[in-house]
Image (tube, rainbow, N blue to C red):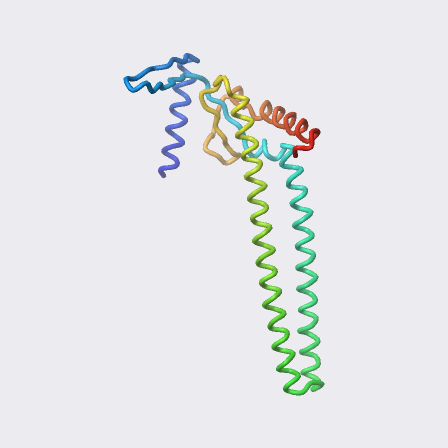
Length: 198
C-alpha cells in the first residue's frame, strides 16, 4: 500500500512539474547548502520493451542460455546414468543375482551417487541463478549510467520506469522516450563492443 502511495505521490509531483513548465532555480540557505528546485517534464520508459530490444541484453542472454543448456544437458545425462544404475540394481536384486552383502554395498554406493548428484545439481542451479542476477545487474547499471548521460542537462525532471502491467495506466505518448533511449543504448553498446569492451 505504501508503495502505491509513493508511486501516486511521484506521479502527482511529475504532473505538477509538467504543468509548471521548465523553470529551474537554485535556492540558497544559511549553511551554504543549495537546493535545486526543478519544474520540468517527466518522461517514462517501458522497461520491458527497452530490455527486450537492447542488444547488450540479447547478447548476454544468448551467452547465458548457451551455458544454461549445457548445464541442463549435463544434469540430464548424469540423472539418466544414475537412474540406469538403480534399475540395473533392482533388476539383479529381483532376479536373485546378488548376495545380501552385495546388495547392501550397491545400495550404499547408489545412495552416495544420489547425494553427489543432488549436491552437484544444487550447486549448478545456484551458480546459474547468480550468473543470471549478475547479468540483470549489468543491464540495469548500463541503462542507469546511460540515462545519467542522456539527461545530464536535466531536461526531464524525472524519468520513470514502467512495465506493461506497471503503475502508469495512461500517459501522453509524447512522454514515452523508450525508442530514443533504446537507440542511444544500442549505439553506445555497438561502439563499446567494437572497442572490445563488451
